[in-house]
Amino acid sequence: MSKSNTSPEISVVIPCYNEEACLQTLFNRLIPTMDRLKRSYEVLLVNDGSQDKTTEILDRFYKERPDVMRPVHLMRNFGQHLAILAGFEVSRGQVIVNLDADCQNPPEEIPKLLKYYDQGHDLVSGYREDRNDHPLRKLVSKLSNWARETFMGIHTKDHGCMLMAYDRHVTDQILSCRETSTFITVLAYLFAANPIDIPVAHEAREEGTSKYTPLKLIQYSLDLFTSFSLVPIKLFTFFGFIVSILSACLVAYMAFRRIVYGPEAEGLFTLFAIAFFLISVVITGIGILGEYVGRIYEVVRGRPRYIIREAKETRPLKATPAKKAKAPRKITKKATS
Image (cartoon, rainbow, N blue to C red; front, side, top):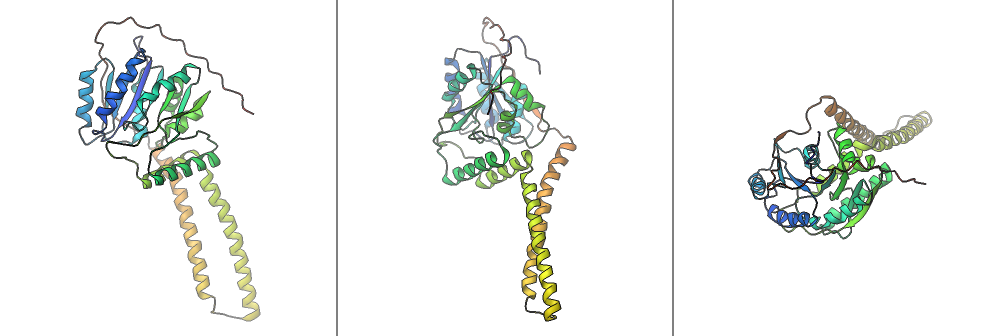
């Protein structure tokens, strides 16, 4: 998407799904924070098919601050990461800031992200230093972060934290990917030349309810691994080889007993147990393989990942001198040992 000469410097992209209880607090905290920066900006609140009063509230925000607010309404609920992608697509800024609508990552932390971006980092990722979440959520998140770093080699400290600042070239590369299971925080790390992780504040949710249950977090982690790594299927293949060797040894042992001792019935139920175990192993393998085949099927059929129903444009309240557009920054990837 081409950017006009009047494009703002900063785009703030926020996905919203049934967040009517949080939006006014978000507006009251975000807008003063951005105004104090004295830099041109736009706020894209992406309505991800909400069924409450989110649509009406976002349209009201647009009437109150048409110079900076840009509500984006999707046709239906597509999910958090695809809603963010829709915001990336219609955004016009050179630096794109992403955060959630629930204010658990405070909007007041945005200037901290921009400070590191201005120092030459094309990706500034926040990590929640002191999390205010349920212990079970923190445990699932820690396990997911550990497994991601161990088996996938992606060393972001907290891929579940959506408070991030991206250079335009990073978001353009993310948008060029066509897979349906899109994990923005991981893709951004892969495409950034000079990323950095910084600690950010984290507050307990005071309004509304979280859309991520522990079961959804587990499913999220499984989707992450099958989208970015072949480790699950490789581990299962290795496990299959081990089971095959042990099964061959068992068959040889049973054949030896048959020759030496003749027919026996004492181990019948043991054989049943072994057979049931091997059947369950096969079923598990089919399930893992099915996850990968399903990913291929979703990509091959080529359906739209999201559909934008309406994206409002900002309206200037008064004429202001346009800033000279910055030349794209040359970002050098740091050498690693």
